[in-house]
Image (cartoon, rainbow, N blue to C red; front, side, top):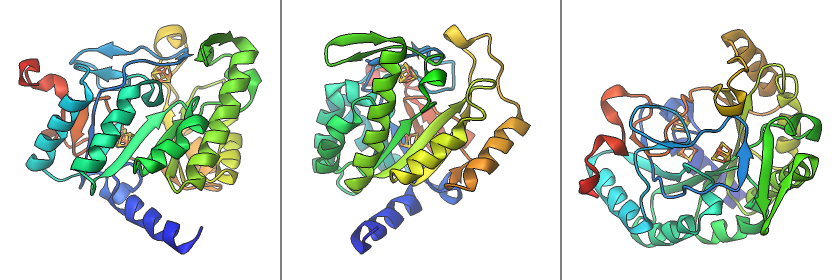
Length: 288
Ligand code: SF4
Ligand code: SF4
Ligand code: SF4
């Protein structure tokens, strides 16, 4: 890492609640739900528009980029927001609105840290563009790098106008995720890798993901427990001892972020602080 990249890295990790456990309950982030479409099918995913559930993939409404900017103007005037992120509720890179939003953010809020999450399928294609738009950090969710495991996690992908299933699908996805991590890191973005821990499927394998993404330039990993839903509703949720075992193993390889409580795609405020953590469904839609 050269000096310029090193100081940029420190600046982001210091102020970003998802990269620094010490800051997690001190500074705020705002997620704008502008990216409803997704280009892959994860077997555990159910996206939804509602005001009840507190998990990724859920938002109270979908905003267009202009309304999202207006929302950011408002919440940054209200409190200490240091990070603005696009976290779905689908895949950020499968929605052109994400790029339009970051273009506008660069003009209106050049000082805020800009962040987004993706499944990584389109990351090799867009890593350069994200860096040009001033995006600082990217979270890539990688649940398996072994096709024999991945084939049980993903049903299909839509890629360059074609639908792929089974091994063909997961081989493209894994290749692109790893190339994407490498390209994003090479472009100066701080890369975090999220892995959903699925008991009996990838609990022994996440360590292999850690070794590979570390080589490719990722800075940090976040291990999330499976929320058993959709086609994976019959799986069990990992217990604390399994979470801890995997986190400890991974920590030997790469730093692990442990404070994540899995936010909604429209969350804003200070993560996990009841009185200061909000989501969009909590304000009347007419407001926007
Ligand atoms: Fe759902 Fe995200 Fe998977 Fe898309 S990438 S299917 S939004 S979990
Ligand atoms: Fe945190 Fe991810 Fe949201 Fe960025 S996109 S603020 S890393 S949860
Ligand atoms: Fe990001 Fe998790 Fe923190 Fe939410 S709780 S802001 S998803 S690290």
